[in-house]
Length: 245
Image 1 (cartoon, rainbow, N blue to C red):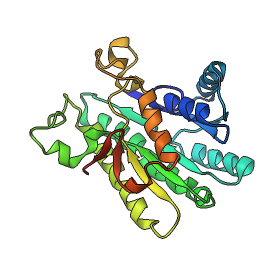
Image 2 (image 1 turned 135 degrees about the vertical axis):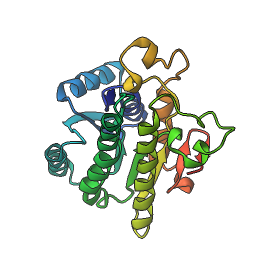
Image 3 (image 1 turned 60 degrees about the vertical axis):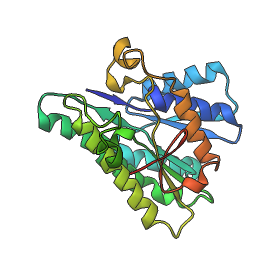
Image 4 (image 1 turned 90 degrees about the horizontal axis):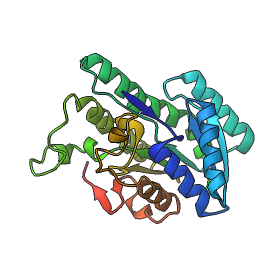
């Protein structure tokens, strides 16, 4: 089983892409381990950035941690323009309760609580974005299509898929519930990219040699927060278009 945050994979790549894109951006990198977040921030800064970076300790399964992160952002900035719910966990544990508990706690309940906690700060922004990093594996339409490559799950892979389908519903309900505000909600599929989500070995990280560069995922999210995908707000987007729910 694995968990990921802003210090690796899609989260790290997204922070780097955004921080390098413009001096107007200030990226707050959240991670369960503040030490790992600071190390990742230093790595990005060493490569050269235009915008600013800072860190915050945040464990999406710990309400006290969430409350402290919200308080810190409120104290330092008074608002939040973009919230990216990227924290994720994957498990193929042979025990069904174990794998479902981890995936649901981290991929569903965590983002729901984080979004609710940060939403007052988002609504103080003139152009707020709420972004949920999901997966095409969570598409019910694709999962029920025998011609889709995601039709069949890997062994014990149903917990992760179910958690992403549930996350999609949370995002959809937020989009509908706050449609009278300026808040734009997106579900983003990052694609099959290098990540620690599948495990720590090089074989797992590289998706057995098939995974792409997570920078592409970061560029997709950047296009969202720059307003280039506003016409797709409230939908399940990926680099090349929109997925069916």
